[in-house]
Amino acid sequence: MSTSVAGATQATTAASVTSATRASRRRQRSTRLTVATVLLVLSALLVLGAVASGSALLVTVAALAAVVLGAAATRITHAELLQSRRDAARDRAEQAQAYRRLAETRADEHAARVAELTERLEERESALGDLQTELVKTQRTAADSARQVDVAHRRNVELEKEGRVVARSLESAEERAADAIVRVAELEAEIDVLRAELETVTAAWRTAEAGARRRA
Image 1 (cartoon, helix red, strand yellow):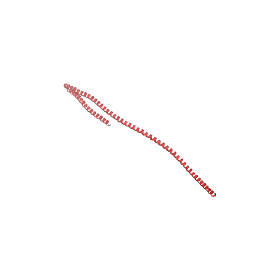
Image 2 (cartoon, helix red, strand yellow):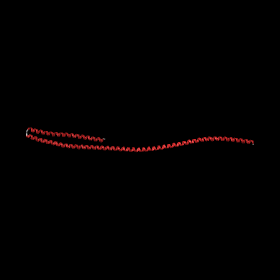
Image 3 (cartoon, helix red, strand yellow):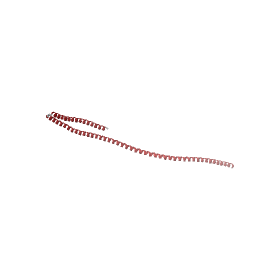
Image 4 (cartoon, rainbow, N blue to C red):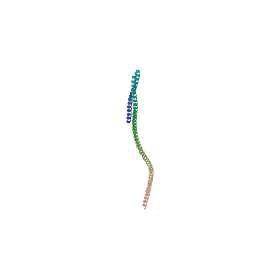
């Protein structure tokens, strides 16, 4: 940005100096052309005045003066023409140099801009590579988490199946325990009956034995 401003400032300064130089040259050229024109007019007036006077000497002097003044005017005009060509060539050379400097400045600005954009592009590519690497890691982590969730889900399903099996086993055991309790109660009742019968038989046997002893 600073290079661009500097280049624009230099171009503006060069244009201002060139414009001022051209204006000064135009004023000088105009002055010299005016002098040449005045000399030509003066020579013409001298010749006309001498002719009007009718004096051969004055005509001769006026003719010589007109020749001298015409030669001076011609020399001034020729010199001005050569100077104009030299000035034009100098102006074209200065313009070419100014354009060359401007082109160099713009080329430097373009190169700096390209370097800046290249650096920014490399930074973006590096950041993109880092993001892609992080994305791959995140995807792997997500895949591992999904596998762990699937394993945990399968484990939960297996545990639920095992729980149902255990529940059915518990129900079966409870049923068997209930049957056993009923059977135990039945056996206890049978034992009570047998004990009662045994006591009855024992009592009858003892009574019979006691009666036999008394009869004996």
